[in-house]
Length: 507
Ligand SMILES: *[C@@H]1O[C@H](CO)[C@@H](O)[C@H](O)[C@H]1NC(C)=O
Ligand SMILES: *[C@@H]1O[C@H](CO)[C@@H](O)[C@H](O)[C@H]1NC(C)=O
Ligand SMILES: *[C@@H]1O[C@H](CO)[C@@H](O)[C@H](O)[C@H]1NC(C)=O
Ligand SMILES: *[C@@H]1O[C@H](CO)[C@@H](O)[C@H](O)[C@H]1NC(C)=O
Image (cartoon, rainbow, N blue to C red):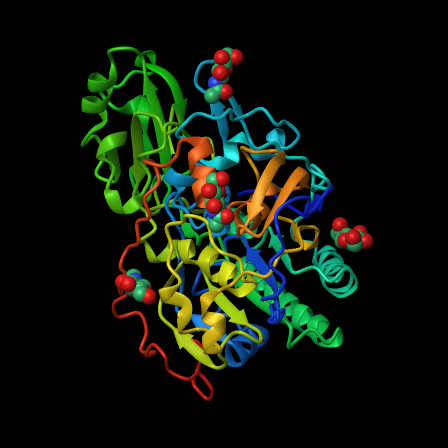
């Protein structure tokens, strides 16, 4: 439940292009289309199945629909958005939770409180490059932002389409909506309120596409819509035995130096000196729906064990269960954060625009693969990441052979903006001292970015060698490309690659 409204990520290069030859001879193909990335927080993959969604359906007919998108674990807002924008698993990008914390001072801060502070993460040799950055917010949401106000949504959309794409000719904008996450938490994913919100999302999709059409952008703008995670119904006492650590025999909070609990299905503990084994043994096997891991024993497939900020003991509850500390303090009817193999954690995915096929249903899509796809669409050479373009290639209209090389036309950095964005719990400001774009241009001086990450990953994370060396990351980064894997069984009768027209879109 991350409240992030509209933040403008303005990327202003104060002295763009000071050094390095500009490789403009090859920019014959300044045919790069624009890109709009939209995240509807918590829009589960199947939310369009029990509600009429004419605009989402039309978008699928005009473009591509993936069966679902699998977020990285931990399936919560900030970590997942950072994965979308870096193509890295959470253990590799380092934004491990929505909550910032310091185990020494016991401080915990929700993302909003970290927004204007730039000193949260100091660089260490193993940290993701974002950490050495300093970010300046230009515009962020007000503290009590109404995330469900449809008029407000339209104001933001007008700004993006009219002002940023049309008047200012920006290349890339990302847009965030805080729903249907909030309503899913409050009323549960099966509630009439959630269905009504899906109708609102659908109207909004129609509004966005009409705006794009009105501004003559249809043939120049690719639109990708997805979500950071899904939502599942919370099981309460009476129905089930809840997980409450204080009630577990042999477990004592006296043995714990720092805890991150009461935040959905994930808990993390830092036991006091010498107490790790005792705490681990007490918790292990204590509840049939609680999985207890020493950090280093976390299942490999979750990619949530290697980062130094992860605490030594990690607790993961089965879908429907919450890891409570002393007693239950949250009464959400819906929750997320569970294993990303749980179908309820999967997100929806749609794409439409000049570079996408039309009328195509594709198989499951991993959110780590979004970054290479976006880089490809924008003609940017991607930084090191954990995703793969292979899996999304079929969505795209086949390219001219010479464009396959992905020669990067010099980017106009000041033309990149991101809106509303990814909640930035851990990083507040980013000033890159210098960053090389595809080896063709060097930006020295200050890049001032509001909400850094997208910009950072798409623009600055370009010279791998340089970045890795500076950050001592060389040995730390390995790209792990999982096989795509058909993890759905019995869910759908759609065939991958099947044309959608005339087919019923919902089961
Ligand atoms: C936590 O706070 C302590 C004390 O202020 C400080 O020395 C330490 O660097 C902080 N750790 C992090 C990761 O910020
Ligand atoms: C919704 O947003 C619009 C436009 O910003 C504003 O005029 C209106 O008062 C808001 N409505 C509510 C119920 O807050
Ligand atoms: C992706 O494509 C490359 C060749 O272009 C191939 O070597 C690699 O195995 C493919 N990876 C996957 C996951 O399909
Ligand atoms: C990246 O940076 C390194 C170190 O400065 C440099 O040697 C290399 O040529 C750069 N790569 C590109 C593609 O510009």
